[in-house]
Length: 392
Image 1 (cartoon, rainbow, N blue to C red):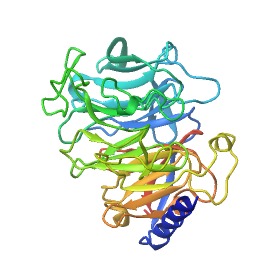
Image 2: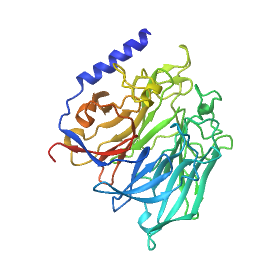
Image 3: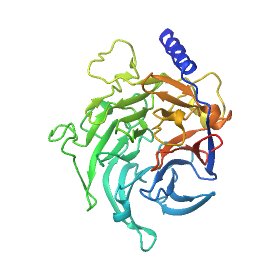
Image 4: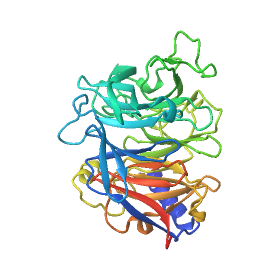
């Protein structure tokens, strides 16, 4: 309890002394979506596509117009009460304008994680639903901690994919420290034109028969979302905690094979009891208390004097429109709707919730970044916001 109080005070202090940011606001792009969890942007054209957990992807056109792009609702598994299954991610191939390929992540009706490639037929203006090629397909033991984010790296152009530890509580099967499965890890693969993939030659565990060669980093509980700094390729990961700590993890571009410690560590702390061997683990660059109640958040009940209970990873801002945000990492918490800007050079965070979204409670399911490196907020109840400078 004393340790928890100490880090709570440290977290609040870091917010209080961070540099002020008061020249930002949000503009609503669209309302009325059904459980949106991500927004993907088409290369070259910057067209916006909203991904709904319930299985549909819409092309979004301003003002407030949506056109169905792909319907996977019959392929996916999702409960009546929102859990962590469903359609979870989308990424366009860097050469989408030429090959029409894009990738999605979902949990199918048999409770398998699926990473699939589809093809958009430009002449016909439709997605070929029969073009699906499954790159990855494996069973999930529970209905939580599915991960499911996927993103192409801006420098090496490989596809990175995250999966959680398989779910339940405390990683009961020790998945995240087991390199013989994909759970609790981020994978790095090279998609091929025929719908298969190869292993990048510099992956950290390549040619080791006892380890999955796709694994690029591991020891994660449930990285809900990761992103790359568009300037230098560094990766930031928002890893959801168990009971006490939410964390932001980081690796420089070119570093790989990192073990972030779960389920021996939760944040900077031994799990579940003090006294573990911390050798070989990579510590987070930031943590905050997991002190809110998830069930109350789902019921829409606002909780006072809490930080959160489920981190939503974001992006380093590299756009040209908001000078005060440049180089800062924006992230949120799903349970409280709070949004922070973290300064990597000072390790301090600033609460941006009020200037961006006001005093109401929001459940932020994701952030997204367009091809101009401008940022967007995806709110689970159905809205997409763009972050802008005031009086733009």
